[in-house]
Amino acid sequence: MQKLEGSRVKASERERMIDTLRANGIKLSLEMTLITIRASSSESDPNARFLKLMGENRINLPFLCDAARDAITSGTYCMLSEDIPRAERIIAGDKTLAPNLEYLPSVGSISVFPHNFSLAFIGGVLRLMGESGAPLYGLATSISALTMITDFSRLGPTVDYFARHMSLPGNHSPFSPELHIKSM
Amino acid sequence: MSDKQLILVVDDDPDLVESVSMKLESEDFRVAKAYDGIEAMDRIKEERPALIILDVMMPRKNGYELCDELKSSDEYKDIVVVLLTAVADAVTSTSYTHMGGKTTLADDFIPKPIELDKLMEMVKDNLE
Image 1 (cartoon, chains in turn blue, yellow):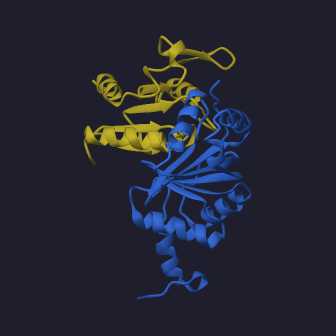
Image 2: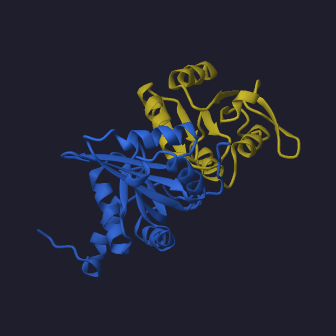
Image 3: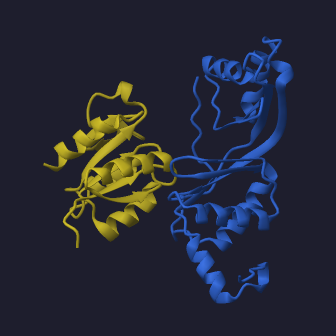
């Protein structure tokens, strides 16, 4: 099997790989906080209570990932950093929920689209993510996009690396949001 | 060249673009995609769609601006424009007054969240 290692990849092979990673767009999020909730399945599910509270209070969760392994359930959520003080006040009112939450401040998401349901594309993007040196805290796919959570401070350098190693349209939309719609 | 009609879907939400595109393809339309008004204008010049499903709130050039541009152009004014609007609760016609009192005249509009079956019905009606 041919071994492909960073700069030793032949130019023609690099061209082929870049061609494989053709995307229509990359989007970056605003600054968010990552919230992880772990619980044993014997407890009343704190993930469900958290989601109910956030829904009732119209706090948006731009990223949501749910997992279960053996008897442990784990939910990973991102919330805009500006919503955190309000969310913390709401969560503090639920004495059994608050101890289950872990916060990782100042994260952001990079979404690459469309993945066209291609595992090769997803693998290629993850390879670039690894090469860029950015940590990966969360990963999810939607119907169109592959979204990765990393440090907010790494979004700029990471998207620069992606843009250099992917084929994007010439007239690409802005990477960062220009519009921010907030539910009141 | 395929005789299937070409629909351009324009929205800055890639998931919405994908879900609408999949539905259109299942209804035997060809689909082009764009993620803001500037990309959309590029696609229009390249491929001249029969109908555009156009989001209103987008970066760089929003849906109102693009709709104005198309409807005031001799070359593109016949392209059917269906606006997607999140503020449709307050909208009762295809004519919108916006930014500095300017009025946009689209051919149709549909509120978000979109009901895909309703959108398909609207697309077919407007292309008849």
